Amino acid sequence: MKTLQVIETAYRATVEEQDDTIVWITHAMAGAGAELGVLLTGNAVCYGARGDRAPALTIGGWTQSHPPDLAADVAGLAAKGVAIYAVEEDLEERGLRDAALVDALEVIPRAGLPRLFGEYPRIWKW
Image (tube, rainbow, N blue to C red; front, side, top):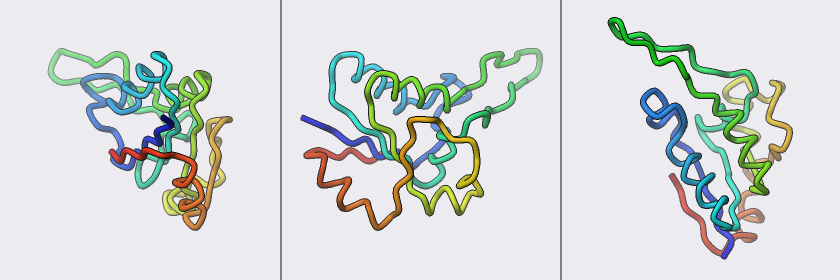
């Protein structure tokens, strides 16, 4: 059954795990054969901007030397056949509408969400 993963909360556990937990589990599920789509909304639309990487974090003598590259993670989902969408108005509010976005990202207006939701029998919001 097709499932749309709606990701709104951004940068969840990205310092500790190097990637977003929901993006990670979506990779795992896609690798196991799940039919998935991802809708980036709210601050999570930042995941679709190429080159928008977090800097390395240093605490005391320890450095997190592998900061997340969430745009690459999202592009990797697309390479696995996962459809990737982002809400146009959320990109605009964050100054990203004209940014270099992940190639496979389909920008849709908020008014187009009912049509998109109709394509997926199951919707999970994170």
